[in-house]
Amino acid sequence: MLGIDSVYIPLADEEVIWQRVATDMKLPNLESYGEEITLEQTPEYLDRFMSSKVVGRYVVNVKG
Image 1 (spheres, rainbow, N blue to C red):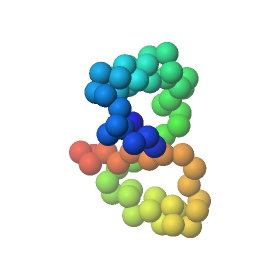
Image 2 (cartoon, rainbow, N blue to C red):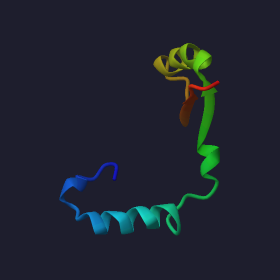
Image 3 (cartoon, helix red, strand yellow):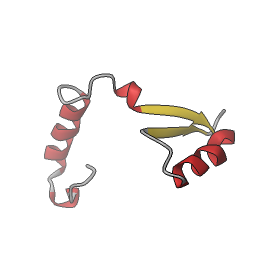
Image 4 (tube, rainbow, N blue to C red):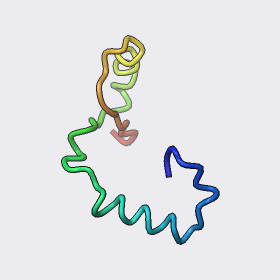
């Protein structure tokens, strides 16, 4: 769980919460919230990030 001190949540409850996040609480169009980039593109995107010119999330595909 992100943003929650989940160490205090019983494992069974945590599993139920994650199951809900993956089903009925799942965001619509989740794929549109992020972009996959290659490892070679990382320096370019890091420069954009440091200049506050990025929006959204990026996943680095290290396999290319």
